[in-house]
Amino acid sequence: MPRVESHSASIYYERHGEGPGLVFAHGAGGNTMIWWQQVPHFAERYSVVTFDHRCFGRSRCPSDDFHPKYFADDLVAVLDAAGIERTALVCQSMGGWTGVRMALDHPERVSCLALCGTPGGIFTPEIVAAAAKIATNAATGIRGNTALAPDYPSQQPEMTFLYDQISAHNTGFDPPVHFPRMLDVRARVLPEALAGWTLPTLVVAGSEDQLFPLDTLRAVAALLPGAEVVEFPGVGHSSYFEQPDRFNTVIGEFVAKHSPQ
Image (tube, rainbow, N blue to C red; front, side, top):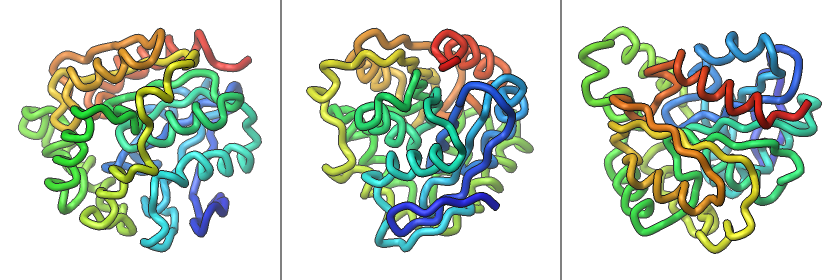
């Protein structure tokens, strides 16, 4: 299994296909496996990289060393190991903390950024309140009953079961201990840091997102000059999982315009 070492963590990653770089960064309910509906689709045209954040999936990390301040460095190490100099980034929920910090600290490595159901660590008062609520309520992790639209579990019980089974592989992530660190000041991107933002950015937001409501993500997009917002009506926090065909189309069109050649 391919791994790379970064700040006391052993990060598991995968690379599929050939072509321009395309990285998918999962949220707190996922790991590399959550992208099963994206990897085969995009690997026909791109070098697709997925990885497990520290303490998730097959990555290994001491509990004390889980902190978003390491996420961008972890991704740089993965890209170096995978031989990818510049990439498009598609970030879901917690993965947005990786994407925005990567764009700010290593802009030469990022061609475009898609923030999906995530403020990307950009903190407004509304995002602070939403994130604090998640940290308080998700005592057992992000599960299908909150990460999906409210009516999705009853309409798609098999897919909801699959979501929870994938999430259950995150045995190194301790929600009561680790979720609050997402709120740490060292993990925050303040609005004033975005004044010179020029990176092509897409914000994907579900109208029924129970974790980061649509209006909070629209407010975040307004802080990113030139950012485009695409709404998924009737979809919850996980558009990539709930409506994969439309998600793949939207992401595919965006990345094709901005990916390195």
